[in-house]
Length: 515
Image 1 (cartoon, rainbow, N blue to C red):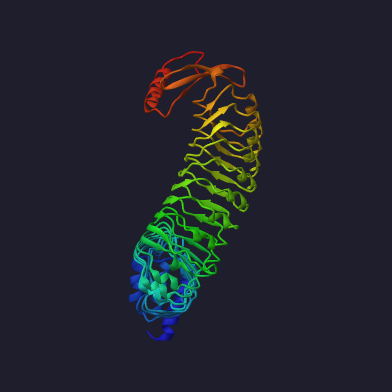
Image 2: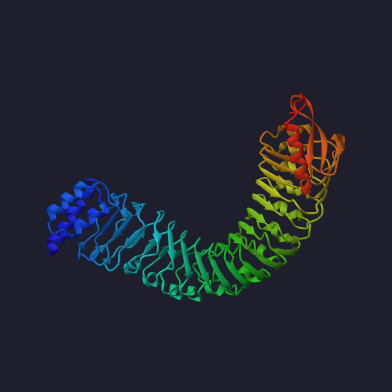
């Protein structure tokens, strides 16, 4: 078949696609083996759907037709070993049933290829490495397996590579350092293993690096990311270990970094003092590691900081007073550590703070009255500490608060009547304290409240009887009907069994006073 006939062959196939005709596998075989164009077209028109199309090794030339995108039932597409040129049409990404795509040995010159959010399975085609002029390649959100072909890292023009949310595995090859024009590298949610190659430092144009939710291991040397234009690093949820090494001394390096996420690893040691060099840092996440020592004043030098995540470590000592001067901060997560100080009064300066989590520490002292200055806060968790004395009435200033937990402390006194002003409150847990007297009737104004727990306190006036597994309290419904409320102590395993047994008995009883 001459070149003219081959071009004509493509044109005829395209015309059939435009009529939304589809082929099955048998039709494809007949089409490929036929030598008469007219007969091939007749065969195409008689069949209803295409599941597999193999045009490989036919010496076809020209551009791949956009009309391939009409073959919505296509599972397998083989276009390898031809002379196709130009760009791969974006319509290929519409083939959501496609599982096999072979583009080997062609002359494509397109700059962008997006095949994300499909159901592609199997390995990445070696042929993608032939797209030597490609600038952006995205095959994220598929079901690809195996390792990434070395040929991908020979596309020196690549500026964006997104392989995220697949099942890719193996080592990240040293050849990644060849991609010196790379700006955006997305590899999150795969199964990559081994150390992060030091050749990563060759990516001098890198802006965004995402390697989270993989299985990378070994020590973390921040010197490998000493790239002046880098704005975000996400290495969370891996198996990285050892100390956090070599935060660059030079202020100019990493000066553009606004997000650093190293959470969910096995990093140890103290928080490096040179973290203060990252002067534009806005989001800092070291949670769920094994850091020890003090929080330190170095974080307080980061005047652009918006979110601090240091929870689930082994940090000790006190909260730095200077933290109250970082007025840009919106979220503070320091739960599940070993902090042992009180809450500094100066923390009340953080008028834009939205989330404050100091739960599961050993913090002591009174809740400072200035905590009421945190007008913007929506979530406060101070549970599982040793806070004592009364709940300050200034807490009523939390008018935007949605979630408040003060459970498992040593708080005394009464529930302040001012809490009626917390009109946005949906969750309130004051359980396991030493709060006494009565529950204020004014709390009825909290119309959005969905969870309210004041069990295991000292509301003596309402306590009817107390037993090993539970206490019974007197309550009054809005209809003014008096009721008895039994509150089980869920800290005792046997209480669950006792509750289940009582419920079984009550189910078989009929009485006007049982509700």
